[in-house]
View 1 (tube, one colour):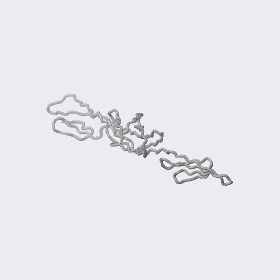
View 2: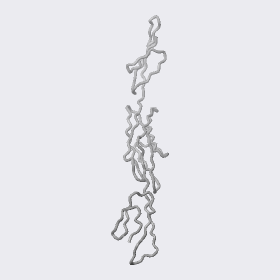
View 3: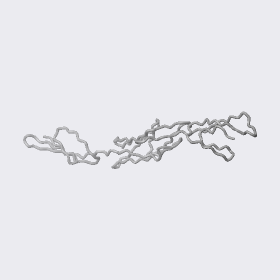
Amino acid sequence: DYTWHFGDQTKKKSESPQHIYATGGMYKVQFIVETDYGCIDSTSQMIEVYHNPIAKYDIDTLQRCSPHCAVFIDQSKLAGEDELFHRWVFGQGSISNEANPTFCYELEDGDGSEYYFTRLEVTTEHNCKDTFFYEDPVVVHANPIADFEIEIDEIELLDPVVYVNNTSVGGQYFTWNFGDSSEVYTMQPFQHS
């Protein structure tokens, strides 16, 4: 007969069992062998089960216009004395091994937004690992490009009309200031006199 006491208040009767510990720590494992005649022998050893890290983080700001410099705040946990190694994946090919990195996302000016899904992989010095995927993406919005054309054939003093063509890219709200104390809030003012 074979009996194993695993030091975590569980036992198994098997010649070569497999056992999974719920938490890390030091455990005294005892192995008892008994013959059909009642002869018994036992041995024991102390084993160390390394703690698993729990990866977690937060991001200071999820959405901004380019350049968006996001601060990644490590909230990972690890019981015990092991050192924790970080590997941040920022969703566009870049990585960092810093504990609390700042990463700047950039988009060309114009129109549109980009979405970046990020994750943190933490590893202990004993190669125990965990990965945390942030649920929400980092969103980077392109800055609009303000531009316009003025169509002037000839401005007459009695009929000083200027035709304006909005050629901006990516804007949603427009303020036109014509330098004569008048403002217009529309995408295309067409003309101003």
